[in-house]
Length: 352
Image (cartoon, rainbow, N blue to C red; front, side, top):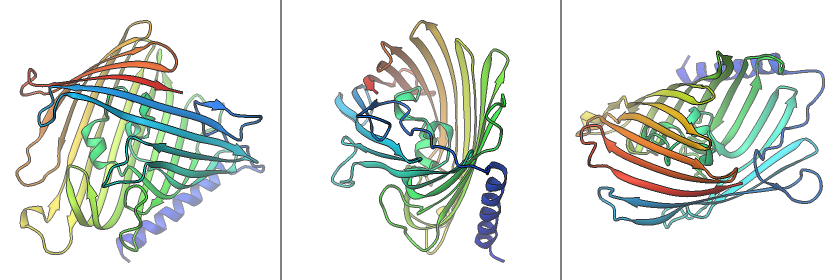
C-alpha cells in the first residue's frame, strides 16, 4: 500500500474521530465570522471590516528608502440561517504577476455543536503566527520561516472540531484539511492534494494563558513555488511545525519550530535532489505602560539550498495602541552578525 493511500485512510479515520467526538443531537448556530467590523442593516447578514497599513522603510539593503501602502483590505462577512461566509480583498496585493486581489472567499457550515465544515479559499491550518489576523501579528511582518514554509491561502475544504466541552478550562481544537497544493486562486498542479492537520489548545497556567499547537502536512507537487526555498518545485513535500505561547497580564514569551522534507523528482542538480529546510523564532514582549508594548524576536531560517547559509536575525519592536482601531508600529531588523546594519520600518495601521 502506498504512503498516499495510508495518508488518505488516516485522514478519513481522523475525520470520523472528529465527528464522533464533536457531534451532538442538535445543530448549532454558526459563530459570526466577523471578529471585528461594523454590522450593516438588521441582523447579522452583513458585516463590513477593513484594514489599512501605511509603511515607511529606511535603510534596507537592495531597496530604496520610501513609503508604501502595505495593506488596503476590505472584508465582508455575515451569516444567514446558520451558514456564515467571508469575502476579503487586498487592493495593495495585486500586481502584474498576480492580478487578483482576492484573499478569502469561503463558507462555514456548522455540522454540530462543536463541529464545523469550511470550504473555499482561505488560510490553511498551519502555524499559529500564520493563522493570526494581519492586524494582530506582533511585528510588522511574520517570521521568515513562516512566510517560506506555511502553505499560505489555498482553495480547499477543512473540518474543525472542539475536543473539549465549552465549560472546560482547557480548550482543544483539531482541524483536518485537503487543498489544491498551490497558493491563492491557482488551480491544482496535478491530481494530488495537499493534506494538512493541526491540533491546538489553550489552558490557564498560573497568572496567564498557555497556547500550544502542532501542524503537519504532505503533498506531491508539480511545479509549485516555495518562497525563498524552491522555485518550480516537483516532488514530495512533508511539513511539520510546533508553536507555543505564554501570555500573562504584562508580559509574553512565544516560539515556534518549522521543518520540511523536500524530495525532488526528475532531473535536477545533484546538490538539490533533497532539501531539509528548517527555521525557528523566539519572541519576548513586555507591556511597559498602558497601550505601550516593546518586543524582541530572534529568528532564523536555513533553506538548505546550494550556496545559502543560515541567517539569524534580531527584530526589535514597539507597538502603541492609540485606540481600539488605530496602532503605531516601529520595527528594527538586523542580522545577528551585524546589528548595526539593519533597517527600520514604521507603520500607521487602522483596522476595524
